[in-house]
Image (cartoon, rainbow, N blue to C red):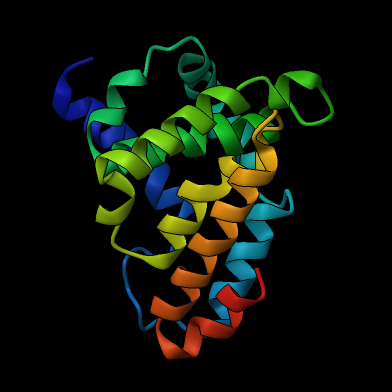
Length: 167
């Protein structure tokens, strides 16, 4: 796949997952409804239809180069941490990518990719693997995630802060 087409693919992932784009003018109720619809499985059918092959490519490591860009990294986290849960819901395979998604998230925190993300909703999704991947340092990562979410809520537009404070 050439670079331009490849960039277009990860942008499609972001456009699907974040229909509000980068606009801070989104109505809070609409934003909340989009958020919970996606996070509670409402998008499973569409994810399976549109992104199941891409998810398999991500699991196979064929999209790892996306992580060279902050938003490409975010798209790969979505593929591994969120799409896999929809594509393989009810199967242990849904969670098999948690450690890979965690490594992407932790590396993004240390290399500046997380800080470069343009919206609070992008940062929330980037941090989700910290809470999903269980292991010996799980409680430390949860503390880190709580701190990140407090920062995100404080930085969110005023009309969206109640949503981010409740997460």
